[in-house]
Image (cartoon, rainbow, N blue to C red):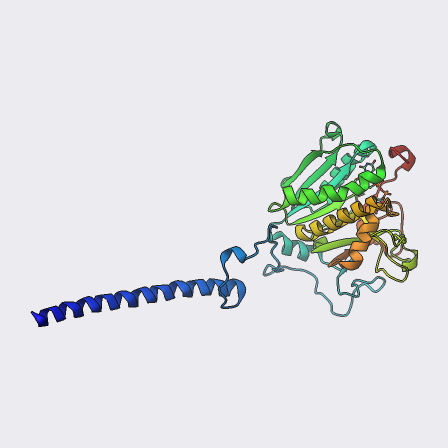
Length: 355
Ligand code: UD2
């Protein structure tokens, strides 16, 4: 009897021990899986609770520049390129001019990424007259073959003309309040863009470009323009010394840039990049415009002045030459081999409500 009891206790002890061993090993397995996944994501063995992992609210753009096997294009040269213009900034950002990229190669790389390019444009008051040419010319030249979603802000949705859009291209018309001063219309764009990116574009688009409407496309504007933060060198100042740039020069304004500082003078008429970067740009400019307004100061070129200050402190990762925002189709200048996008002539006094 004594011996039997001993055997029962021994069997029960054995069962308990093997249970413990099993539990321990399955815990270790779980932990192993957990560590492996945290290793993949964070390259470390730390215990990181899920809720701490900061998931981006923006759609993640593919960063690799994958090329297709067998693609035929001209051999790139490490020695020969454009010598009449600078094609790189002192912070190593490319400046895009005709002759600095291969359209076939660059399209083939970016088409694999299945991108959506959001594009915003504002047409209030008499500026609705520019919509048709803007959109029709965009159909001919702007990101042809890519998914493009235009967002048109207007105070007169009823006067938006019918424009036949190609496959994978769409237009959303958004009604906005009329404003009396052209300066307010121009400045107000920053806030509208900030909110659009937050409320509509997040998770939808990969890149966003914000363009003036009194413009037309005359040549290719494509994937060579894509970058994290993209500015366009202003067509009137690309060859001017920095002290002639029309930066805001009053220290009271947050757009202030003192003499002796500044890289380039950037156009307010075109800028873009990834949602995250353009959101930060528009948010910062909107905040600075508001702070200036409270102090009753309006920068000399409104939001363009604030954009220039922003780009001084947050260098663009890619610059577009004035080919991408030229003075007009009939204007020439030696380095401009192609006009891609240009202002259309307008009578300021006639077209603006308060000229
Ligand atoms: C410059 C800039 C412009 C803006 C402005 C700020 C360039 C080539 N242009 O152009 O982007 O920074 O200075 O003062 O860099 N708009 C309307 N209705 C109006 C007035 C303006 O819809 O009644 C919109 C429209 O989208 C227009 C934009 O605001 O394209 C800028 O206005 P603008 O073209 O009259 O400004 P402009 O030519 O002085």
